[in-house]
Image (cartoon, rainbow, N blue to C red):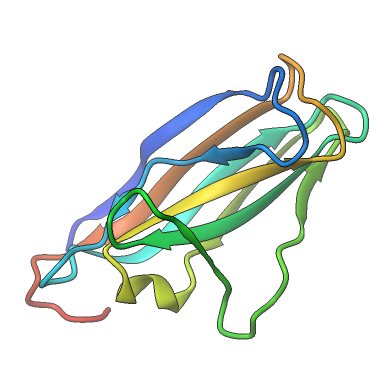
Length: 139
């Protein structure tokens, strides 16, 4: 059960992305017949420099790696704004909802809001998890 930290990362900027654009992290293969990864978290950072731009984060799941569905946590909490036009970096670790383990793939995404992004609106999405051999079951 090796721990993987800050892996499978993507980063970039929101230059020209209009409100409602989805910025997707890489997909995490959770496994088909046997679970490959457990205790999945997203390590995310955002610098929202454009005045009024917002970044809202959420988890999505898929069984075919092409059709993605939003997944809410156990209490069905609404997604909240992660960062808004402050130009200071916000970094957090966000747990994947337990429901992701019933799917083949999961990913974390940001959705932009309110304003069109600029070159100084930065993001990064990476993951942390435990690699499983398939014999451990749910950790």
